[in-house]
Length: 225
Image (cartoon, rainbow, N blue to C red; front, side, top):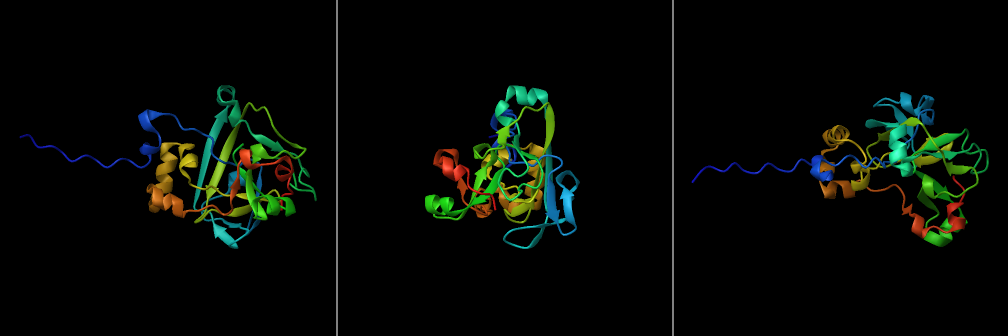
């Protein structure tokens, strides 16, 4: 009987994208020009480097462990308009926040909080994707291209960007599908536990996420902290 070589274990990166499918690219991301608050003061997100320490809402200064960038072109947005960035006008959330015009990818989550969210969701602070915010001054914009930038810490963090609290990268199954194999392998090298479903589940969200189906108009307009 001929020798049969043992089957190789599935590549944890490739297993996210069966049959060679292209990345989903719906990952939560910042765009160039967003000012992230670090130990050195505000820094454009595109100038962050691994090891920089960013201010977090829950855990003080935390080092950036990984940074990923995805170039988006006009043809990407023409093929998938749902990937177009969301524009947030300076002051759209009141009290002068955000401190300047900013753009986020549609699935990038922002921290919102007030009595309405507490009553509706029994949590005062929740995360809401930019595409679900209905505040005046927030809307999807046409774009001929941009760079979507994401960075990751040792845990999912709430970080300060353009004066508002928003999220760092969270390696959920869906978000990992949104990046290329090379970036996934980089993450798995830094965080080997994320190769398993249990490891990804352990890297929990900093706050509960409110989805579009759960939102009411009043909750979607909740003030950003």
